Length: 517
Ligand code: NDP
Image 1: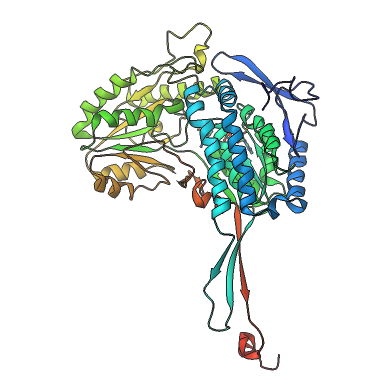
Image 2: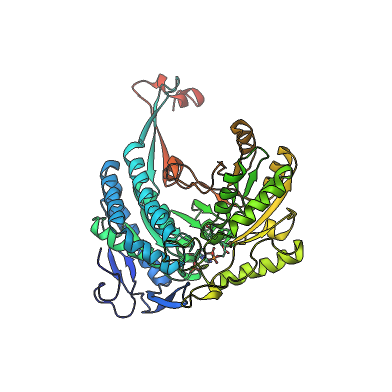
C-alpha cells in the first residue's frame, strides 16, 4: 500500500482524495462530485471523497455481474479463493498502522480500538472466511431413497452478486464482514460505506489490487444511502443484500429487496441487558458493565445499555460503578491513553443530548455525567464529545430504557429474582445481545438460555469473534453474520436427485400414473 491515500497516489485524481473502486480501478463519480469528510475530534476537514450516485452503483453492479457470470472467481476452488483472501488479510496486517490511523481520524473511535480491534478484526474476518472456503464442503452426500432407488447430494453454490450497506460505527470491520464471506463463497460484491466514514473501506481497493483479486469481484461505492444504498438493495442484477444500521433503514431495505425477492441479512439496533446477579464478583462485574456500555461511546449495536442489577447488591454496585466511571479518560482519539474520543458527529451528540434530557424528565438527575466534558485539549471540539452518563433506578418502560440511543448512556435497573431479570431483559423490541455476570455458571447459563437474543456473554461482554455467529432476534435483525452460518448465508443450496434408471420398475410415475406413459 502506498504511503498515503491521497491525490498524489491515485493517478488521474482531479479532486477526490479517496475515489470509488469499480472493476478493479479507482475512479471518480460519474457526476464528478465529491463530499468532505471531517475528523470529528477536531471538526477539521479530513479528505474529499468521491460522491457516487445511482449511475456509479449501476456500473459497479454490472462489473460484479460480469465478473460473476464470465470471470474466474466463482469457478475457482475454495482453496484457491482462500489463498487470495489470506493474502488480503496479510496486506491488511502489513498496513495496519495506516488503516488504524485513518479509521480513527475519520470516525473518532480511539486509536486503541482501531489498532487492537478494528484492523485485526477485519483481517481476522478474511482469515476465518478463507478457512470456510477451504474447509466447508461444496457437496454433501445425502441418504438415498428406497423407492425410487435414487442417490442424492446437496451442493452449496454462490448467490451471484451480493451487496453490502455498512454503518459508520465500525466501518472497517463491517466492510470485512460484508466482503469476506461473499467472496469466500464465490460471489462478487458491491459495498457502500457510510457517508461519515467511507475512507478505510475505500482504502481496501488497493489491497484487493495487490492481492490480485480479479477486476469486478469487489467494488466499493461511497455516496448517499438514498441513492447508492437504495440501488444496491433494489437492483434487479443483485442476488442478495446485507445491511447493518438502524432498524428504520433496515425496514426500507426489506421493502426494496422485496421487488426481486432477494434474500436479506439485516443486523440492526439493540438495547441489550447486562444482568449482574447477587453472586457476581462485583469488582470485575463493574468493569464489565462499563466496558459493555461505554466502548466506543456506546455507538455499538450490541452495547449493554441496560444494566440489570440484583437489589441486594444494588447500592454497593452503584458505588463501584460511579467511582470507576469517573476514571474513564476522554480526549484525543489518536492518543493511546484515551479511553473515549468524540462521537461520530455533532448530530449524534444532539441525539444523545435529547435522550439525556428525556432521562432527566423521566427518572431525574444522572449519577454520573449528563453533559459535555470540560478540560479537553484546546484543539479538540468539545461539541463532539459527551460524558459517560449513568441513570439509576430506571423503569424498564421508560424511553431511555427502551430506545436505542447509540451514545454513552447507561440505564441501571434493579431486579429481585432471576425470573424478573429474564422478563425485564426480554421486555424489548430488540434481541441482539446481552450479558450475565455471576460466579455460578450453571445459574448464569439457565438465564442465558432464556434470553431472547442472538448472543449472550457470561462474565464478559463485546467478545465478537469471526468464528461465532452474530445477529439478532426480533427487531434486531434477520440472519447471522460470521461463524459457519455467516458463510452459508452467502450460498444457495441445490439438491440433486439421481435415478439410476435402467428399468421402468425404478420410476415412481409409472406407479402413480399409468404404466403406459
Ligand atoms: P443508517 O441506518 O441511516 O445508516 C446505515 C447505512 O445505511 C449507511 O451506509 C447509510 O448511508 C445507509 N442508508 C441510509 N438510508 C438508506 C436507504 N434509504 N437505503 C439504503 N441505504 C441507506 O444509520 P445512521 O447513520 O443514520 O444512524 C442512525 C441510528 O441508527 C443510530 O443512532 C443508531 O441508533 C442506529 N445505527 C445502528 C447501527 C448498528 O450497528 N446496528 C450502526 C449505525 C447506526 P449514509 O451514510 O450515506 O446515510
